[in-house]
Length: 156
Image (tube, rainbow, N blue to C red; front, side, top):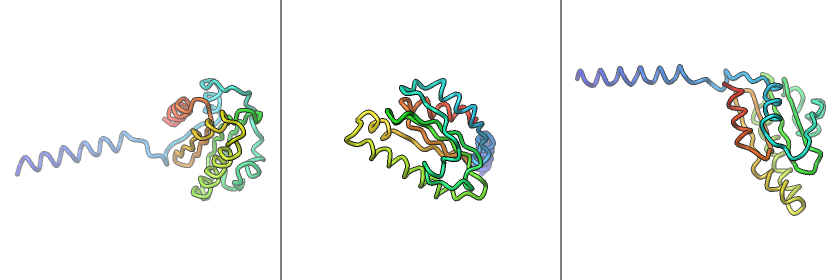
Protein backbone atom coordinates (compact mmCIF):
# COMPACT_ATOMS: atom_id res chain seq x y z
CA UNK A 1 0.00 0.00 0.00
CA UNK A 2 2.80 2.38 0.89
CA UNK A 3 4.54 1.64 -2.43
CA UNK A 4 1.39 2.54 -4.35
CA UNK A 5 1.07 5.87 -2.57
CA UNK A 6 4.73 6.71 -3.17
CA UNK A 7 4.52 5.74 -6.82
CA UNK A 8 1.36 7.79 -7.28
CA UNK A 9 2.99 10.80 -5.63
CA UNK A 10 6.11 10.47 -7.81
CA UNK A 11 3.99 10.21 -10.98
CA UNK A 12 2.00 13.29 -9.94
CA UNK A 13 5.20 15.29 -9.36
CA UNK A 14 6.67 14.24 -12.71
CA UNK A 15 3.45 15.22 -14.47
CA UNK A 16 3.45 18.63 -12.77
CA UNK A 17 7.11 19.21 -13.64
CA UNK A 18 6.56 18.29 -17.29
CA UNK A 19 3.50 20.50 -17.51
CA UNK A 20 5.37 23.48 -16.09
CA UNK A 21 8.26 23.02 -18.53
CA UNK A 22 6.18 23.12 -21.70
CA UNK A 23 4.99 26.34 -23.27
CA UNK A 24 1.39 26.36 -24.36
CA UNK A 25 0.84 27.39 -27.99
CA UNK A 26 -1.53 30.07 -26.69
CA UNK A 27 1.40 31.69 -24.84
CA UNK A 28 3.68 31.77 -27.90
CA UNK A 29 4.96 35.17 -28.94
CA UNK A 30 6.77 35.51 -32.26
CA UNK A 31 8.35 38.65 -33.63
CA UNK A 32 7.36 38.27 -37.28
CA UNK A 33 9.91 40.78 -38.62
CA UNK A 34 12.75 38.99 -36.81
CA UNK A 35 11.49 35.62 -38.04
CA UNK A 36 11.32 36.93 -41.63
CA UNK A 37 14.90 38.22 -41.36
CA UNK A 38 15.99 34.81 -40.04
CA UNK A 39 14.28 32.99 -42.91
CA UNK A 40 15.88 35.27 -45.50
CA UNK A 41 19.27 34.78 -43.88
CA UNK A 42 19.10 31.01 -43.27
CA UNK A 43 17.39 29.74 -46.42
CA UNK A 44 19.12 29.85 -49.79
CA UNK A 45 16.23 31.06 -51.94
CA UNK A 46 16.89 30.71 -55.67
CA UNK A 47 14.84 33.78 -56.54
CA UNK A 48 14.88 37.26 -55.03
CA UNK A 49 11.96 37.50 -52.65
CA UNK A 50 10.13 40.80 -52.34
CA UNK A 51 8.15 41.91 -49.32
CA UNK A 52 4.51 42.31 -50.26
CA UNK A 53 2.20 45.05 -49.08
CA UNK A 54 -0.10 43.78 -46.34
CA UNK A 55 -3.02 45.40 -48.15
CA UNK A 56 -2.79 42.52 -50.66
CA UNK A 57 -3.60 39.81 -48.10
CA UNK A 58 -7.24 39.63 -49.10
CA UNK A 59 -6.46 39.59 -52.83
CA UNK A 60 -3.74 36.93 -52.57
CA UNK A 61 -4.98 34.67 -49.78
CA UNK A 62 -8.71 35.55 -49.55
CA UNK A 63 -8.34 36.31 -45.85
CA UNK A 64 -10.24 39.30 -44.50
CA UNK A 65 -8.06 42.03 -43.04
CA UNK A 66 -10.09 41.92 -39.81
CA UNK A 67 -8.71 38.39 -39.20
CA UNK A 68 -5.06 39.49 -39.28
CA UNK A 69 -3.41 41.55 -36.56
CA UNK A 70 0.07 41.48 -38.09
CA UNK A 71 1.71 39.92 -41.12
CA UNK A 72 4.93 39.69 -43.09
CA UNK A 73 4.81 38.24 -46.60
CA UNK A 74 7.67 37.62 -49.01
CA UNK A 75 7.07 36.28 -52.53
CA UNK A 76 9.23 35.39 -55.51
CA UNK A 77 9.08 36.88 -58.99
CA UNK A 78 6.87 34.01 -60.14
CA UNK A 79 9.66 31.85 -61.53
CA UNK A 80 10.28 29.49 -58.61
CA UNK A 81 7.15 29.52 -56.46
CA UNK A 82 9.20 30.30 -53.36
CA UNK A 83 7.50 32.36 -50.67
CA UNK A 84 6.61 32.63 -47.03
CA UNK A 85 3.71 34.32 -45.29
CA UNK A 86 3.69 34.90 -41.55
CA UNK A 87 0.43 35.85 -39.85
CA UNK A 88 -0.60 36.76 -36.33
CA UNK A 89 -4.36 36.33 -36.12
CA UNK A 90 -6.58 38.86 -34.40
CA UNK A 91 -8.34 37.70 -31.24
CA UNK A 92 -11.72 37.38 -32.95
CA UNK A 93 -10.37 35.65 -36.09
CA UNK A 94 -11.87 32.36 -37.21
CA UNK A 95 -8.67 30.30 -37.19
CA UNK A 96 -10.30 27.43 -39.09
CA UNK A 97 -11.33 29.78 -41.90
CA UNK A 98 -7.83 31.32 -42.08
CA UNK A 99 -6.22 27.86 -42.10
CA UNK A 100 -8.67 26.80 -44.83
CA UNK A 101 -7.77 29.84 -46.94
CA UNK A 102 -4.05 29.08 -46.58
CA UNK A 103 -4.67 25.42 -47.47
CA UNK A 104 -6.57 26.56 -50.56
CA UNK A 105 -3.76 28.94 -51.55
CA UNK A 106 -1.16 26.18 -51.17
CA UNK A 107 -3.30 23.74 -53.19
CA UNK A 108 -3.71 26.41 -55.87
CA UNK A 109 0.06 26.89 -56.15
CA UNK A 110 0.53 23.13 -56.47
CA UNK A 111 -2.15 22.90 -59.17
CA UNK A 112 -0.95 25.98 -61.07
CA UNK A 113 2.54 24.54 -61.44
CA UNK A 114 1.53 20.98 -62.31
CA UNK A 115 2.58 20.26 -65.89
CA UNK A 116 3.99 23.79 -66.19
CA UNK A 117 6.97 24.16 -63.86
CA UNK A 118 8.16 20.84 -62.44
CA UNK A 119 10.56 22.41 -59.91
CA UNK A 120 7.98 24.85 -58.56
CA UNK A 121 5.40 22.06 -58.46
CA UNK A 122 7.69 19.80 -56.41
CA UNK A 123 8.56 22.70 -54.10
CA UNK A 124 4.90 23.61 -53.56
CA UNK A 125 4.03 19.99 -52.76
CA UNK A 126 6.47 20.24 -49.83
CA UNK A 127 4.98 23.54 -48.65
CA UNK A 128 3.82 23.68 -45.04
CA UNK A 129 1.43 25.58 -42.88
CA UNK A 130 2.52 25.68 -39.26
CA UNK A 131 0.14 26.80 -36.52
CA UNK A 132 1.58 28.11 -33.25
CA UNK A 133 -1.11 29.54 -30.99
CA UNK A 134 -2.49 32.65 -32.74
CA UNK A 135 0.20 32.44 -35.46
CA UNK A 136 -0.12 30.79 -38.88
CA UNK A 137 3.05 30.44 -40.88
CA UNK A 138 3.06 29.32 -44.51
CA UNK A 139 6.28 28.41 -46.28
CA UNK A 140 7.12 27.20 -49.76
CA UNK A 141 10.89 27.14 -49.47
CA UNK A 142 13.79 25.11 -50.86
CA UNK A 143 14.66 24.13 -47.27
CA UNK A 144 11.56 23.28 -45.25
CA UNK A 145 13.71 21.97 -42.38
CA UNK A 146 15.31 25.41 -41.99
CA UNK A 147 11.83 27.00 -42.23
CA UNK A 148 10.58 24.83 -39.39
CA UNK A 149 13.76 25.25 -37.31
CA UNK A 150 13.56 29.04 -37.62
CA UNK A 151 9.95 29.00 -36.43
CA UNK A 152 10.81 26.72 -33.54
CA UNK A 153 13.65 29.02 -32.48
CA UNK A 154 11.49 32.15 -32.85
CA UNK A 155 8.71 30.68 -30.71
CA UNK A 156 10.86 29.67 -27.73
